[in-house]
Image (cartoon, rainbow, N blue to C red; front, side, top):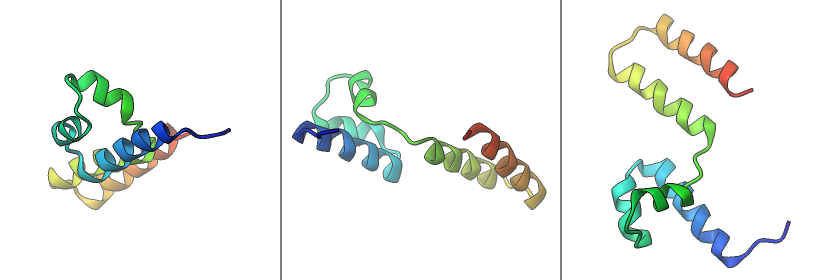
Length: 79
């Protein structure tokens, strides 16, 4: 599938949001007036969302057993 130069803008938005999680900064960088438009540009990868949820469990002080359960649940969601 041929790519267009505009595809790089989408790629940047996706990578930026996955690495920083800063939607407001991305919106400002891209010059969008609405968050809705910014979300159209940032195509989040499912694995990234799973890692974000795992971080939540870690920040809540879950133990290793609970973290293992999260990982098992994630593997089912990715299929």
